[in-house]
Image 1 (cartoon, rainbow, N blue to C red):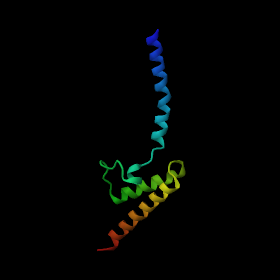
Image 2: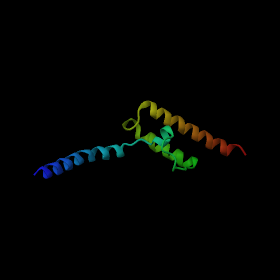
Image 3: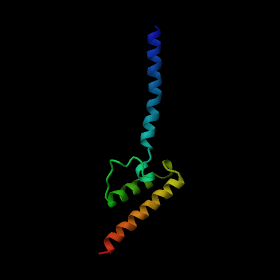
Image 4: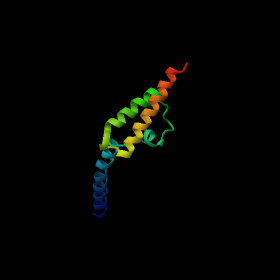
Length: 90
């Protein structure tokens, strides 16, 4: 009986944490774009980076704070400026 109670308690504890993990992954911030964290495996072209930045900015205040959105917009401007320089300078 004690074993059954422990197993039921463990099952209950796990079932309570699953929705939290699901919600976290749905609203997860792109730390690579935002703070250059966890970028070791990502290699993007400038166009890919611009596309990802636009997608993250569209998530808006549901996912990012005002300061984080400002950082993303600044990085987007920087990437667009770099792309423009690449095409205007021979």
